[in-house]
Image (cartoon, rainbow, N blue to C red; front, side, top):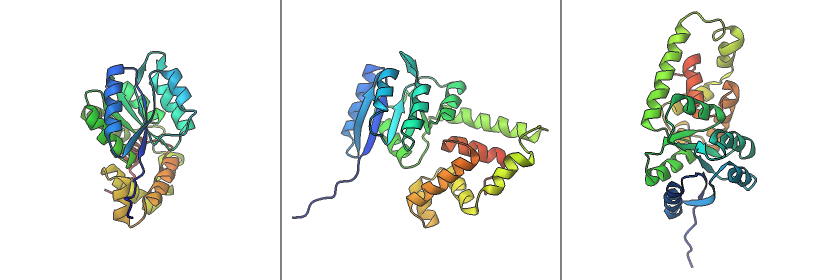
Length: 234
């Protein structure tokens, strides 16, 4: 008798202290046939305990928790769940919170004006290799990039020294630079693999090497460094 194959589910963990928002998001995740809510926490203490359990594929983190900053959860997840993609879900849309989250290791940043259904779509996006960002946040980051590029055009003591970006640029292979260029254009890892004729795992290997060489921990940081250092193909 034929039995339909069961697709692997995306294991999702949630850190959210807003009871109503957490419940709506949990319901949307549970209703998705390709997802499973692996665990949830309402504060830092519960979140740290959750991180001692088997790793999730995607972790959603609120920054404004009652007993500490969500940033600490992101950093802890980087250590304890290194393969887990972290996405922020927050009411804070200022540049300081955004940049601190990305530096801590977040891969995406959504404001809470997003609906639970949209967030479920973005969970799929980040799991597939994307970096979902709310439009307001994206505009802030673009402004930051422009300021950084303007600053690079002025005399600076460090950025263009031979021991800095020039050395990093020389260390990126042509294939790594090709992957970096595709990432900057918004392609997912699966799409990049198709364009380059390699598997998703091979693309992930390229990405890990790029992150190590650029000393970054997320796609957005990689794109920022790529623009500053002149590493993009186009």
